Image (cartoon, rainbow, N blue to C red; front, side):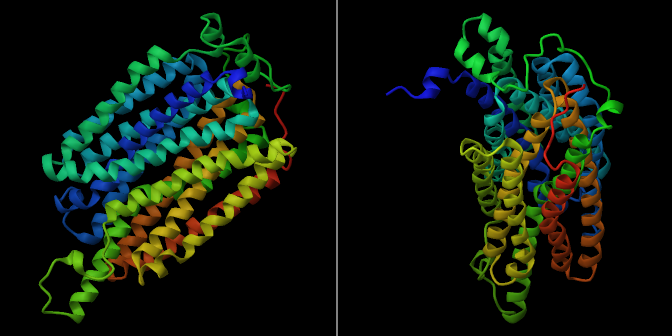
Length: 464
């Protein structure tokens, strides 16, 4: 029996795979710093004072996020203007070079410089990816396709803990940065060889007419041939509630993901150290391997577990609204219901710091659930842009939201640095993490409420 997907064609999923691998590479490069934080701290990169190391590290993280925010103000408009193929390629080439440049750094200032270069160039990934989804998928499949490509962030976060710390110990931390940067250059070859617009693939005989028609099957969208290259000014986009809905949704939730990405390894390593010190205080004559102390875990493996759970959330997050739509629910209701469900799961992280004192794996599980919910949320919040805006404005609006998310990340990074410095000086750093987890837990419900008030029915913008 021939399935409908076989009749329509599947070439659009090849394009989705390309974007998936680009996002995986993006997170290879992005994750290395957090994973090498203990090694870099011991090498004196962030200074010698333990409390100040947290603050200096937060400054390096912030340099990425400030540059990322600046890059987002330009990347979306640039990609809308220059086109998806060249825009994506320029971005990935730039961030691959910046990733390798970290090998030249030796202190907080120079790490901050290369981190800023990475942030500025990585700003192009999600505007380009979101624009690609809008060009290659109908509305009903976009959240699912977005969930798949966005799961590349999790794959990058799963794989890097398994080889980056080992590579740093064997060959030196510089080679870890060089290696992940070189991976991106390989992707460029496949991107230039495979990617083109649906119209170009149709003319070349690679895309079937049936699949082309399916991609453009939404009645409220038209193939925007005459609008290609047209740029919609931010001043006009900022007049719409739809833009501000995406702005605040990203502002409140992106910083949570940044926090997990850059501080999760340090949190888990700190949980191990807390248990080691507590055990040795009760057993002063202990001289065995610290790995044998009850409650000690491999934090690199734990990070991989967290992001493995997140991968499931990312893919399922795109599947659920599609399921609702296939069942007859209108698109905006399906999207909002799915996002509300996902907004509830991060509340589990409120117990992470408390549970960690009993068994670190309990904290790992709650954080994994929260990260899975974030990825499910992310797959849908990106898709709200393609639901509410014509294709010519998708990358620009994505850039606006990405900028706001980066600003939220800056605030989280500075708050984390100051809080953890304060509580580290008191010998109670876990209390600082507890406060940060409170924000991480309630951010999504707050964001959902604001988005619902701004765009109750997610009405599509038609007058751009």
